[in-house]
Length: 174
Image 1 (cartoon, rainbow, N blue to C red):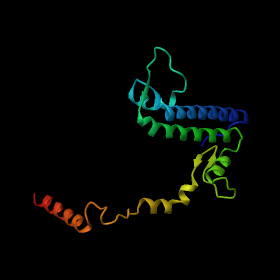
Image 2: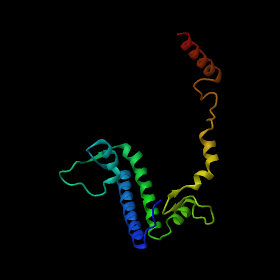
Image 3: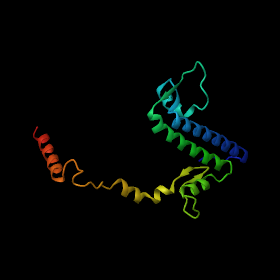
Image 4: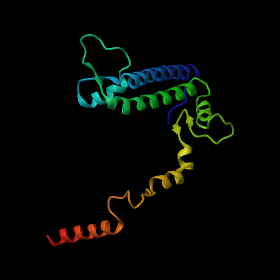
C-alpha cells in the first residue's frame, strides 16, 4: 500500500500529472496530424519505452531520432491520448479536483445519475466497474458468429466439414 501523502505533496503530484497529461495530449496531436514520434536510438528496451518518456525537444547532437509512418497514426496516437486521459484524471484527483466525476459524466453522455464507469482511489489507482457490468454484452459480441448468406460464404457447410475430415485423414495416414 502507498502511504498517505500530505496535502501540499498531493497537490504537487497532481499538478505534475496534469502537466504530463498535457504533454501526452500534445504528443497525441502531433502523432495524429503529422504521423511523427520521437524515440531514443540506443539500447532496444529503452528505445521502446523512450517514446513515452521523451517530452522535451531534442538537442542537436543527441541519439533522439524521429520516426514517421502510418503506424504512428494508428497505434501511437490513441496510446498517447489514453495516457493523457489517465494522467489528467489522476492529476485532477490528486489536486483535489473532480476528475473521475467529470470523466463519468462525459462517458454517460452528460446524463447524471448513472453508475460510475471509472473509479480512482489515491492508494489503489483506477478501477473500471463498467467492464464488469458489460461483460455479458462483450461476451455476446466477441463469441457470436457472423451471419453470412450462402452466396457470401467461400465454402458451404458440407464442403468445410468434409474438407477438414479429409485433411485430418490424410495427416493420419502419413
